[in-house]
Amino acid sequence: MKAPALPIFALESFPQQPKPRKPYYIERLETHVAKFPGVSVPHAHDFYLLLYVTAGHGQHTIDLVPYELRAGSFFFMTPGQVHNWSLSEAARGFIVFFDADFYLFRYPGSRLYEYPFFDNAHAPVLYLPPDEPDFRLLFERMFAENASAYDNQAEVFRSYLYLSLELAARHYQGQPRHAPTHGQEQIRAFSSLLNQHFRTQRTVSEYADMLHITANHLNAVCRRLLNKTASALIQERVIVEAQRLLQHSSQTVAEVAYALGFEDTSYFSRYFRKHTGLTPEAFRLHP
Image (cartoon, rainbow, N blue to C red; front, top):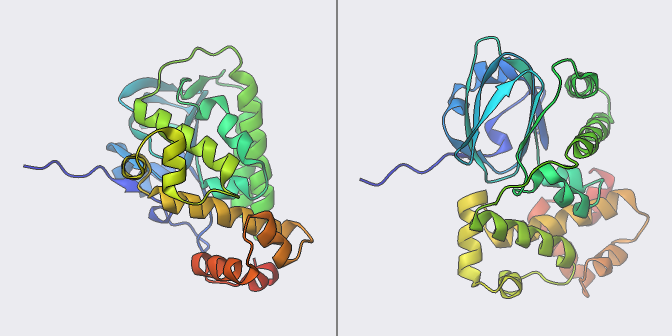
């Protein structure tokens, strides 16, 4: 009998109020566990995850490796990693999800892929003092901002998220490394190449050639670990950069198209509309 497929959850699997859907999610750990009891069994996500524990204890298993969960634990997970946990009733803290696009909209892609805690060669957890004040304050402010009704809520939330990641990176100096799986190495190499070449290389075969594997193999690895095709990941990277330039630069649509390697502005507009449902001009007016 064939084993059931491992669940791979998207952000849409964790609805929040108020709507519409946001490219990020934050909830108190105890509330999240109560609302979504299925997260206690092994599953994966197609987004990044942060878990900061303020009280209680338990075990958090990531890619088959068990880690102690206690007050002051700060866990980091990349898309495609498999995890589950066993928590005491007293477990408290905050859990944050975010799309790569949400980070990349404001900050350099190279930085996202450089964080040591998102490198599978490092342990995915920091053990901080239970009374460490900085991260608890940042998570509390993210939580409060998410519940606010301010127009710039996403920008403020993104800033708090960025600060959390940057401060966490300081704590990783000198942390021991461990070997990633072969598939994880290939995904990371693909992500790095994609960030370097998305303006000029848009086919799966081009990236597969650079990785010295077949396009079918690259697609299979992406589907298995990220639940997305390599082609979809390439398109997403192009679109998020286009959105960033349209909203945060004074470049014309033609200039944005040229900056992204599109020689034909009309083709760029069709490409953008196909993947966002809006023309570049409409997105600029109503991002």
